Image (tube, rainbow, N blue to C red; front, side, top):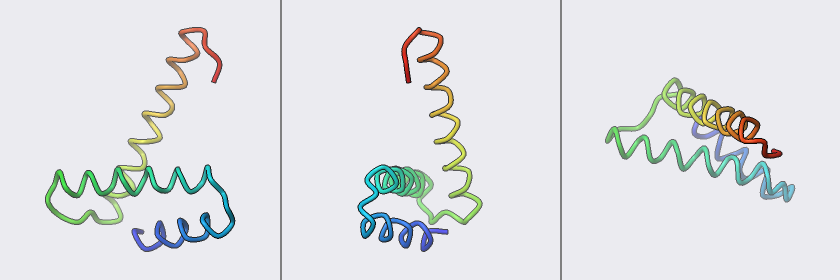
Length: 72
């Protein structure tokens, strides 16, 4: 899965897709931080869990903005 993220990042750079590029970079950074925390390389399952955590945090943030009456 790590190789796929690298390839997707390259494609985003070539197509000048800034949103996609920044999202992939954020995912790779979170994966790297988790690897440093665990002191071992993550498996595909571990990478998937990191991505799911990021999605969950994003959904919670959107909900907090809505509760606070702010636009997303």
